[in-house]
Amino acid sequence: MSRSEFRFVVDGVDLTTEQQTLISREIQKAGLAALSAANAKLTNPLTVGHSDIKLRPEWRGLWVLDGINADELGQKINDIGFWIER
Image (cartoon, rainbow, N blue to C red):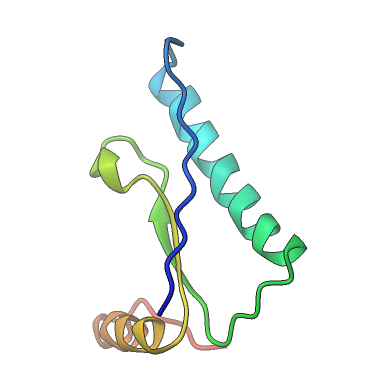
């Protein structure tokens, strides 16, 4: 299994909570668009993330899981009722 991590860091700029939330949402959209533009071969992707700075700021962003890990996590989420299979 492979892992690639990409970061977007803003240093020295004071941003409001609203600005940070907006930027997080836009980065999530851009990440998914970049996967599409790169013609990434995803079999069963699961995206997990958030843009609310009040919720675990270190988790802010987007994780795209694919393969066995996505299936396992998706089933766990499904068990709690949040997973919608397409």
